[in-house]
Length: 150
Image 1: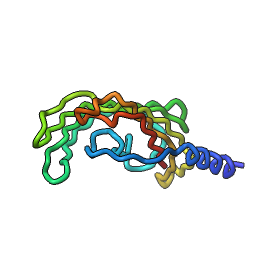
Image 2: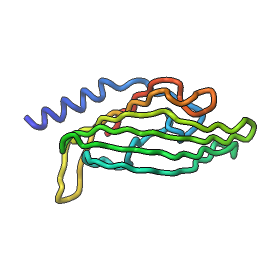
Image 3: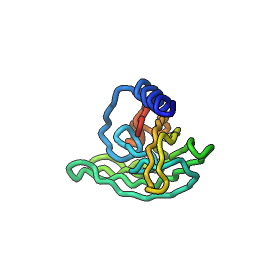
Image 4: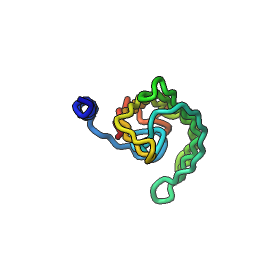
């Protein structure tokens, strides 16, 4: 029964996937930004973090400086909701500097499988990015984006 439930959740998540899109500015919290909170599949937990990063644009055309506030709240030991609030400064070689809020993302994540003794887990979720960043200034994607993850 448990295996059937896990299989149903995976099928439901894959069935809600939308076509991918691309954007010229990488790493700014837009469509090319993957990894809403982690590079590993970890169980839901409550946390708040502040990160700083500097990403180079292609062909030395500039850089994107990102300050990001992220948080996750574990509603249950198997389910969490999260938010990501990026603040960006885009330095481009031939354009004026842009500074402002990037695309805000909300995340839902559920724990599918866990082996705490071996520190192994598998989570399934979906991040929804809202077009809060100014697309014309390179601060956002200009559209709602769905990013399912496993």
